Length: 195
Image (cartoon, rainbow, N blue to C red; front, side, top):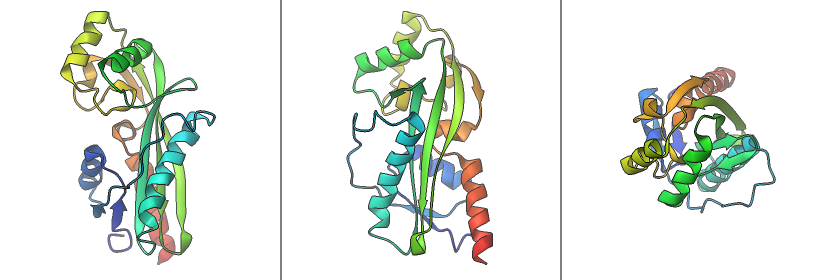
């Protein structure tokens, strides 16, 4: 599997790098040179938005390396059909956390794997998070921690998530940024088929 699936990770996310490294998947990083669109895909359901963003990232890198395996991913937070991306500033983060307080919401990671001869996988994985009810003071304290910066939904599960998260149903790694269980199963299936 290692030789066939030495991946290019099309992502600037240090969390995705850590997840792949911990899983023992060999990879290198090439950051895609595309801006993340703001509201152009709001007409799509949340899962399709995550998948589309993952595809755009992977495709931009794969076009330059079509004989390689390229992995793109994008994680979003969805409260019903409302998608919460990365907050612009503290006020936006406070607004998101206030909205998520006491909620059960979805964290969706879209994944695209593009390979030689046009092989591809486009999928998404969903994990449900139950957020604690937070007071304005709780939200202010979390804002002060700066853990919301660059995080979809204005929070991270892996740092001090236990302070604001009551429960999780589904893949933990999916919330961090990659559904490793699903990705590993797909890589093993494709590697077996290639032999």
